[in-house]
Length: 313
Image 1 (tube, rainbow, N blue to C red):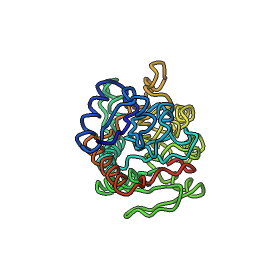
Image 2 (cartoon, helix red, strand yellow):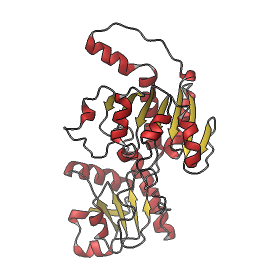
Image 3 (cartoon, helix red, strand yellow):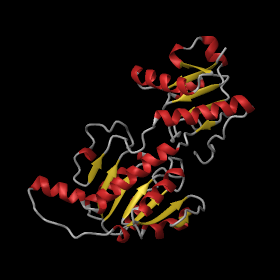
Image 4 (spheres, rainbow, N blue to C red):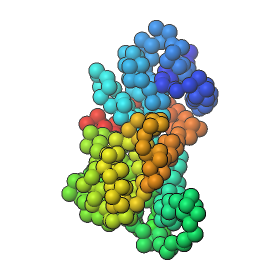
């Protein structure tokens, strides 16, 4: 009989049905069962859970779990949520990295070609060309040089942009100058025309982009946040925009999602609001990745490498 695997956290019946169909097709030797449909016996014995932004309490209600596979790259809600060590495996997927890199390039072009200014001029019926700035004359700084940051760097370099990057620990990325740690951040920020946030949310990165870091950017620089909302201090961001120190912010992630209707970010002239669409999970690609991880586990009895609980990723 096929092994039971728990599916936890789908936001709607339609999403649950979609995920069940795609994941089950990719792993015919497993029996995928949504958490709400599991019997008490299945909940007591299941060893693996595939999760989609779940309620940690539901995952904790599966006492025999050996490891958890996330369908997202971000796992901050799960790290430290359990009363016992439990490997939590992030989704590391080439298609997600490609999609995110595509979004970084698209919105970098949006800022480099002055699209916010032209949108504002259209509303005001102003016909005013702006000087062209070459990609090579535009320095893009990447906060985070993991799989997503590295893929973004490759796309930006291929499009002719000047690129620099920062990470918590030393990393080498072909074609760009890198810096690391608290000491390496100010100088990197001072070179940026556009800053792109791609770091995971951890205790160290919460509030990383604050008033001091925003002030360290070039005058009139722009920000893209495709990471997590709490990495950027919203009040400090609005103050920098209002003062004219920052020219524009493209925000795909927020402290609270969906972004509340009362938020001033919706109507701020210096902000572009996106509904968390920069790096969507491609379920066909994700299912292949998850299936490969499960096959390896069934073969060896060893779960895939999980996130470092101390680092948070």
